[in-house]
Image (cartoon, rainbow, N blue to C red; front, side, top):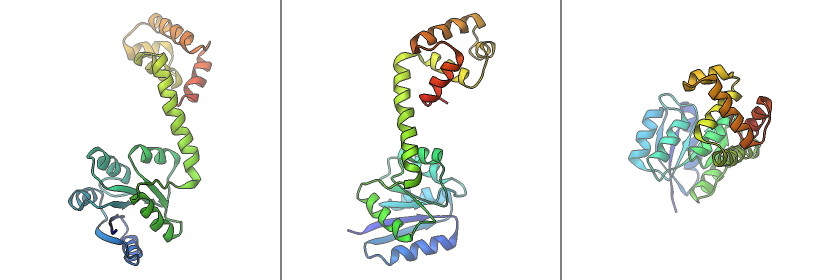
Length: 212
């Protein structure tokens, strides 16, 4: 089966190298290449490639924005990020944006070919050095969000975030248009629901659950 491939990178030399790399493989067909983020999205809509190999830093629209729009529009194209660097938060955003593959440019080119084949087959390929920590962080956030949503109201969750940001009761009251006394009542209720006894304990709880 031929894998229809689109390539997007803001460096022409890398685009040429990618096209040469995949042209040497009998199961790939490059249907489009682009060096601009806005035009990349137009290219994907026009050609509906099986896989898009995409740099995260693109003019016009960055790679994560493009991935999010592909996901939002329910286009059939799977996305592989091919990037020089990717921090933990960017990897989390990539996972949320529906990216199925991540390969760093410093890796052997053949790993990118393997990644694209895996992603086309419906599997996921993520950069090993940051994946475990990032997935652990993501899972902790998601589990924490579910736990907190079961215990607190949306307004109370907002107040916990404000406390975690260092806001005092008066500042929280000003933001929510309520009195300082009402803030104290809400915080007392939050302490009881979460079984904590101080602002410091509440901050630690918020950090553990990924609210900050």
